[in-house]
Length: 290
Length: 290
Image (tube, rainbow over all chains, first blue to last red; front, side, top):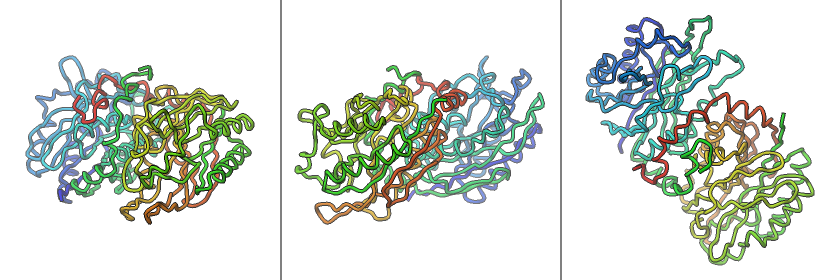
């Protein structure tokens, strides 16, 4: 048995950055207190979701991967608590900017950086104004407790991301997220769609998946608002949601899995035996014309 | 508006082949009577699921694609009723055998043949004894009512299949299926896992998906039994199951969609805008070492 305990967290954010960070730290301490060894914080938790608007004023919140007070602070916290922490942050890299996550191991070592590959763009979610599409590719990170894959929000809608991380050795999938209402159409309620896209990735790769999403209503610059729907969750390896948060509360979800049992289940189910890469050339194109 | 009405069917099979075929035909007539324009029959509906055992006696049930009484009969039926019919059958091709589906358009024209790409193998499902892995690759078929993608059973567990068909132009996904109990372990109940893998493909590709599965208990040659769990379903483009059959009944499910509205929804959601094929090289490998 190789048991591991995972946590999803969920919180609201405001423009008191130090307050956001302190509350995120409190959630990590809460999760660790409940036995969690890998704790997922939500996407860009240090600030409101500034991509609601296109404003040059928000670039000031970006920091480099190498010299980054937020990562350093959570690395100290990871070492103190002995937990693995993917830390989502706004990255400045020379003249480019990315939506990134630093992977911090349970001894506080920063294992590396992942830059969000798939960048959304639409009313209220104008990320293409801020972030270049990531150039790191999908990674699997060998941490103290498990080899993990970490995508970021919109990545979760692309089965390619989950599969690439699984093929590279991930045993568990993590997606920090910021998603809620669609300001242009109050009739769009994407919670179920969002969950099912990820449940499918858990099911197809036969591994648990953890999603952390923010809650609360955040005002934009031009009279708009986004209400984030929380609903953070943890699935089992069949994609069944075994822990779920509600749409408004801050808090922590915790679930445990036996990684050896998961590996045996994956092997017996056979999906990684029967793949046919020689037939997948269409996936390497935008229009299927392979 | 470009409305289309889809049907899933579900039935039990026995060794009276003519009886199976007659009942399949009756289900197609029932579906057409309810307005269905594209009707999905389940996998290998002409016979019991003989892959429960490895026996050379079953190869006699294979027929060529070109000279095939089953396809010819359902092509006549398709023309009579004006419905599109994917017809699952056991294919003999020279010295090789495949698990195939012939795509019959609503005028009875046979548009082509798809050979199941992913071949399962395990207790009760020993398909690798019978079928070579398909060599046709994934296709999208321009029929009278919609451009459709058709995978076969185990293909449904591979997000690569659904994505490839979607990229090639599919607007709807269809999966004839034969799945039920696992004779080596009565504790494995895969219905939810099976559904979620496909719901994820519907959600990720923002298109409806239809699955038809058999029902009934079929005895094997050595005292084993398989009980097929039915649970055929139709999803909407968010992967939500909008029509579902139970685990035992024979019958038909029908649902309608507006293909123009689906196309508009897909475009606005942006997943086919934001793919990153240059990062998907790991998918072209078995072990992620791209």
